[in-house]
Length: 189
Image (cartoon, rainbow, N blue to C red; front, side):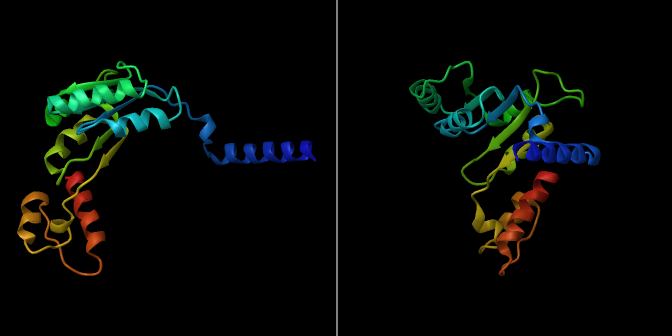
């Protein structure tokens, strides 16, 4: 029975190969570079490091503008037993870090750009989007959180949304979907 399952599995593999399907096991990923641009405590980066399979992440740049936040990041990384070369605390303005690491061409230098950029500001992420889009590598992942839902969902001052995102929100049952579409349009622009 085991041999029949193995033969059946190999038949499925051959069929998948013929159809051009790619199995997860066949994809070789290594050296992923991650930027957490607005870290505060660095806990999200620590979770990335501990929860993503070993060897997939090259390093994570854990950035914050506040010196006390960077000291807290260093303390949290050390407390969790992670090497400071793997999770690299950095004191810097998020926009400066993004523009300093932008991908200048499509061939992309090894030392430039990030495979994953995590933006989670207090409020709107709009001021970081231009730099983030330029700093994410081709095929990379851009994670954006906007916590200014009230203006995105058509609150009392829709002109605020127009000023930040270039879009006018409409109030209604679909306002949350529209908020996501407004943010996606802002990233695309």
